[in-house]
Image (tube, rainbow over all chains, first blue to last red):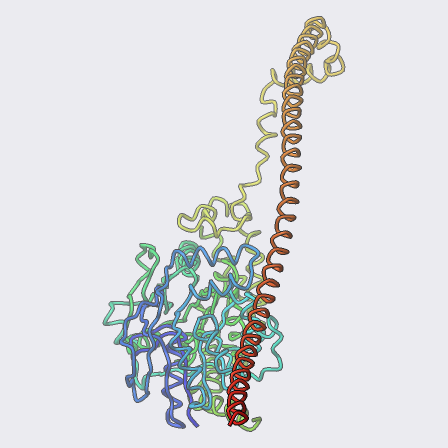
Length: 391
Length: 229
């Protein structure tokens, strides 16, 4: 059995959620069967400009075939087209024009899939909303498996995706909420699907003390890890945190790890450390009182799973259904919908060490039951075996 | 500022947690209950002078409506309240005089001025209406003229259309005539071809007859020679 993974970007230096998810799954599945990756030459997810050379290369033992992007994305024009289709009545052609503009537009990749589809038993597409998935699944629907990595953002309501969600052989969802959302939108209950998610690479050793020493941190701190931008709910987090500090005089600090596109508030207890290596990230996470996850749109949140893998509790934005659902299923974190709930939940978490420990234990148990690599790999194998048996 | 803290802390206590079997849904229900009660706490006396929740600098949008409500002081009523014996007397006099206010207004205001103002206003309205009527009349006349011109143009256009129709009919006739000529041409060519073939056939027959005659003459001469011998 040979499988191919199709993803918008691929590389060791690419840290985007779906791309990293794809790479990790591909690297774990290679021990069971030959694995190839089909991707674009893009590195930058804003413009999709060709960065890597076209052709084949090997990354961590996996053959990667790169295809050029024929048209770089113009973010301004893309924004205009997106606003037009989201705010006005439109035709299917308009949605397809939006998809062309969104990219990464690589007709050569689609041509390759169409011509060589019989060389692969299954072709696993990551991220439903991009060009490669929409046209790639149509090129090989009989062997397509879709990992939609769908969030509750407005484009999921486009008509072209409703049809797309009925096309692949099977789905691999990241969460129960994602499955419910896609099924309610497209009524694709007939298409088999399994909630799988992704494992995480937890280093064998990590040290909170090392992190505190390296960055000169003392006292309790809560941590946010990820891109610091509007969609991740960071402005709300800053507002809530500063207000919490003013009202409670709590000594807690907010440590931010990740690249930023926002202005970070100038406050002595808000520490932005930028992008850190994996080792430092796990050191930081292990020493945190809790992980705060203010994002509105998540299809899984790998960093939440990492926090639970280390036994740390989570405080999540309840407006993201996936995060709230994960907290409720795992009993590993609290959530908030407004400042009042943020204040009370944070106050409770900071003041009650036993609760933090209990939530951390529950999160860890949830992670061990659902998201260790062994379990994730076997779920992937199961869905492929089930499809093979049904052929 | 500090007055709100112990209250919130005191309210956090009622959340009962079974640490061996933590139930997030139950904890959240408790937290939501406390959070829902929070605005009431802040509106209590003393809280308004504490943390200025409605003016939080970088977070003005997130402050709740209840937080930003001002202290419940009846400020507008307060400004009308009598403050001394003089105001009290004034208030009593005003209350006593209240039934006579319409009469006072009638006496105080000269009616003829009011009427004059009304008439003036009506006159101005009439003038404006006259002006509007005049303008309308002019516009109607312009429209009539334009209509007449348009009608004439249309008549001329119709005449042109009639002429064009006649020309089209002539053209149709010419085309029919040309078609007939074409057919005639064709038939003539066919007939000429037939005649040519017939001519060739007749010529061949003549040549054969000439040869037969030549042969007969030769035979005649030969027979004559034999007879004469």
